[in-house]
Length: 199
Image 1 (cartoon, one colour):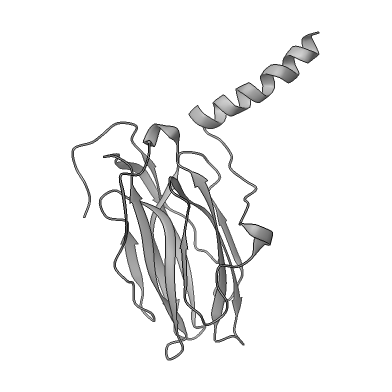
Image 2 (image 1 turned 90 degrees about the vertical axis):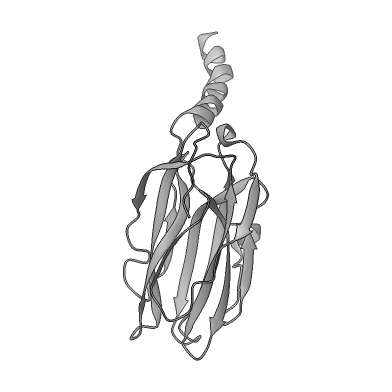
């Protein structure tokens, strides 16, 4: 009898823990048949479904395909405590061939990417698709390690803990390898409205 009760209540405890405590996300579903969102040397536009944010990023590099990468993303719903997104927008374009640092303005969270390939530079320009949740504010922010660890390597970046969100990235570009390394800006979000916003 005790074993039956355990099997009945264990799923309920797991669901509650996932909603209110630290929770391990993975493994991720990258979409239908793990297809890439782009083909080499072509632009793409990827947006998570409404109310979801980016939680995993996968990429493979090919020198013979114009030193370009295939990309794939996984989305998960934002925590219920954040509510529904109040607005979403595309951030400014980050130019190809340059290093850059960008966070979503207005305390937004990354919910998509848009990119265009430039053969003259063998690189891509990037834009973040950001969504704001009420007037929540970021805190406990940090930078991930570099993805990929070395230029030209495949990469698979995952958010392992619930309630941490990607707010932006900083990237370096190698003119020799014609590849980019990313460090993602990861933050928690307040569960209450706050009076300020970043720009």
